[in-house]
Image 1: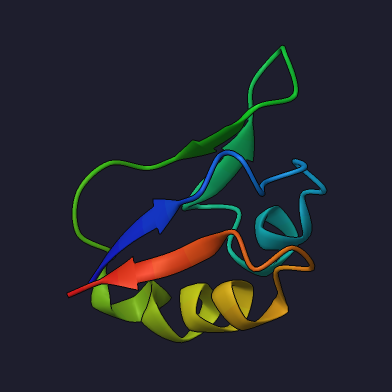
Image 2 (image 1 turned 60 degrees about the vertical axis):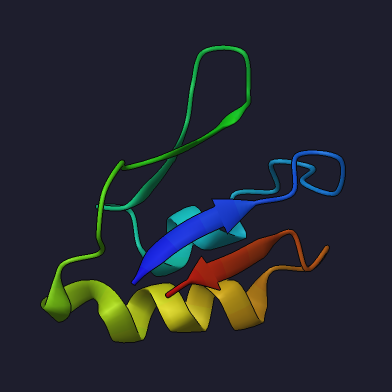
Length: 63
């Protein structure tokens, strides 16, 4: 599983960071940063919850 973001929808609310801080972060300019590559197996459930919990539906899974 990899993660994509529709930057036109993302408001960097950091809800995803709360679900999976090992995968999501905000940079110094308050832009969402996603750890590159496939999501580790032990993070898949948290990332799935982050995708479902995104208030703007900006996150999606790839593959």
